[in-house]
Image 1 (cartoon, rainbow, N blue to C red):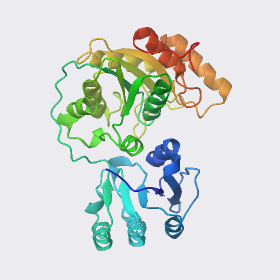
Image 2: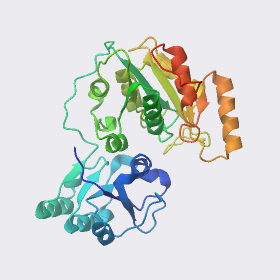
Image 3: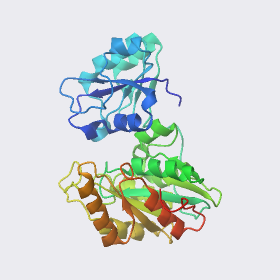
Image 4: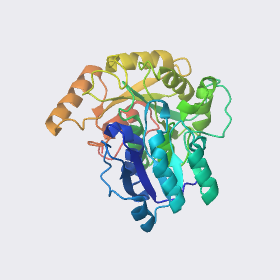
Length: 345
């Protein structure tokens, strides 16, 4: 789908920064597409871009109001309706990554019909998928997995794509969530696919390819999260990854939205290998990606050094320190992978 740009990022009144992670991801990777943000009273997120009213955004050329939030159940709160209708009446299209379809709201649907505006539901695909087959297919695939949701799986995959292309690879990011689809312009929000077809959808996202091609598949949830483990397992089986990177946020003690404690990195590695061998007996970990934004540089490096020593894998913060060490490990594990001249970047 082609969503008109630039965007006015609508954050509603989300309670924290993670509640706006869709919008934040788009700003981080496609800043030039984002004109400004619109926040309601009580909003606790800030994208660091100009606050604009609808009138100001329209005057600046905004073409789409993008609902850049995530919440439990992916619902569209009733008290957001007025703002969305106002944007439509002003001449903007509306795009959303929520589970709830925009046209299910009668006022929004009627306003769009009356003013000839388009409604984009990025989380929903019109593509039909087969059930997964688990048959080995050519090409290389790397999957990012997590100790929890919202720990950096998408950012790690995107950082790997950027660095791999800089080294001369044939590599491509494969989006499996609504934010990734917004960023890449393609992909499927796996958590909106009927459960029987999740692994088949991932086989469709990352199909057979040339022997030197790498698909970098965005992970979702965690095999240990009681809410999302089903999606994570189907994604693992469909991805059939040759390699995986464990993503972790070290300041957390419990998983987001539930009372369950965070699993250890070692537990994630063990379970990912055990389950992943169903469709790829040669699956192996190649690195640890930590989100260290809550720590100073000295403490962050100490955490990474400790993780590297404990698990025998390169550990880095992909945004803060780059993914060079992980790609060097890939070069050691897979002979078709290029090392950066003189070592890691």
